Amino acid sequence: MSATLRNDKVPLFSKPNLNSLKLKYLDNSINYRIRLLKVNTGNQTIQNGIWVNLIEPKGWVFSKYINIELENDANCSEKFTLPAKLNFGSFDIILLNENILFLSSFELGSSFNQQIGYWNWNNNSIEGKISFNDSTLVDCLNICYENENNSSCKKNCKDETRNEFGKTNVTANIIFLIEFNKKNKTLKFKDINESNITKKSYLQYLGFEKNKIYKAECLDI
Image (cartoon, rainbow, N blue to C red; front, side, top):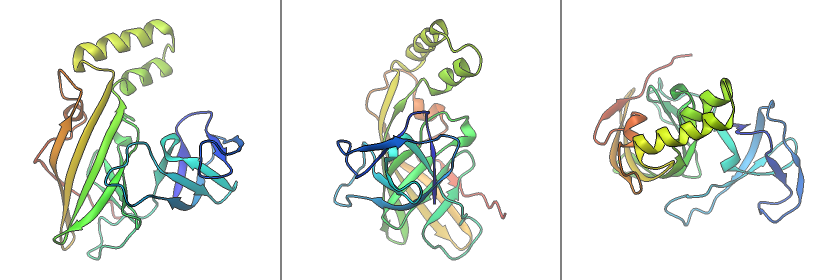
């Protein structure tokens, strides 16, 4: 399991505490190896993030600043083992032993930052819960950074996003179910509740639709 940084200035802390000593700022060109995660399993949802302990350099980083990546791919195997990464076309679900999950979507052009949640077994299926919280500006701002990166472009992004979704930030509660049938693994979003979007659904824009069946793709690499 490894971590890549989301931006240029990600602090490394001496302890899993935002008030602890900042040891240094990490280099965003490096893929960092992860030693362990510090998780409070008493919570039913994760809204802010978890602490991640790095192997080298030694220290702690908060998950909201990084993307978690898992090398193995469990799509093609009949036997399900943890940790596992399942690819459902335009997005991945990473399941860890600590009952933590990550929702990623690099194929959507980084349309949203990696989201974190909990999973549990439910009658031989996996039920996952995510408190989705992110900016609706990500796609538009990526274009600004690639091309202009100026204040007028960013202002236009905000205006266009408010016209389309009503808000520049989305908060939502997501519940999904992963079912197993030999090699076939399917995912269905049981509930998608966007609490603050007043116009077009942002999660539907991303391709997440309630009750739609998503089949895990066997990458076989």
